[in-house]
Image (cartoon, rainbow, N blue to C red):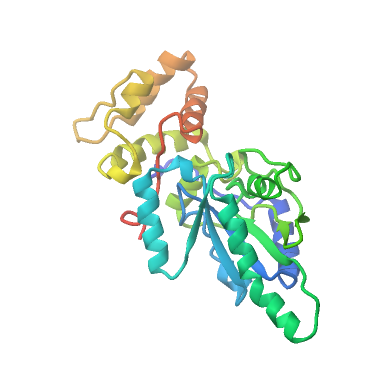
Length: 297
């Protein structure tokens, strides 16, 4: 999707490497792993090392930002994950939708723990759960909703949580909030593009203009997939400019982008790229799913 001339999207910030080392030490202390993914890109925000880390520990899968995808996309992914033997828990941490159900599921997951402790004449204790996921998928916001107060910093940008810390949730649940953990490298540049578009990696990892132009191509292709939530003429409706086609039939992305920059940002292409990306991330273009089971097998 990115042109061959565009620089590859790559990362591995030092604080993430440090956090991964600390994470390995803490995993032995937890009973349950709560994995948080971005509902717009459920596969791109799945960590390839997850199963190696959690081994036989209980695992809850949370798909956050359910408000940012269509009901059809949610239904498709829900069915797909259940076919894989995984029950997804759909949440919107911003307003709290689905949070109570997640809390109850986490507490239920710990019942077997305390049953085993009782058999050994040991007192029950709170379930120890690790909140794990890519940067900016909403882990800290989810914890704040669970606790019903702001106990950890939260913002819609990558890299806000920099260290591991425990948070007590009543008498039943202790949560360990971990910094976002990325793979050491990502060879799949399509997945990397989706992470960049959803702001789930730091901005230093990518070229904003290249990513914005790739996004234009992507949503043009998604128009043929109704569940993605991209209506025909979306760009024209939002920015007042139709996306014309070249003689080859391909969309004239460069031409559209240059015209949009002239109209909206005085010819400043970087500001136009930022505007386009911010509009998507803020759902001002609607609820758009960048991944669906039928296009991301």
